Picture (cartoon, rainbow, N blue to C red):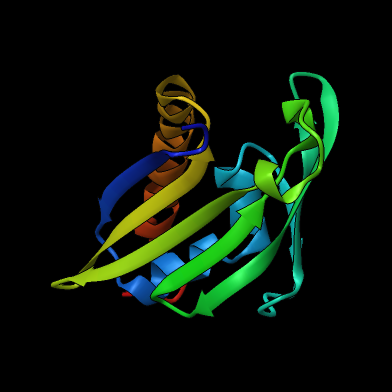
Length: 148
């Protein structure tokens, strides 16, 4: 059945969940780990979230809404990209679920994207998300100014 495939990427980050959370919710960091995207939101549950930028020479503005916002634990948002060529309809939105779990001072970060039409679509998304979570790891593990 279409939409039943989930793309999941998991990585362990040598930083506390609070640090990983600050990275995934910071617009400046998002520009770095989300391929140059401008992230616009106020992080209010029920409120909008926008991702703007240029991909393969095309301007885009992806959109969604904040479903859950649990600092240092869980972030759930919907996501639709007009670049998909699909109609802007609820059945064409993905849900992106970011889960942060404490692992003895480190953090296991999992990013899952639902509503992929085929296993191939899920594999393609997983490849993109694998790259993204590796970038989040690199940013979160950098020495923060003022940290010893």
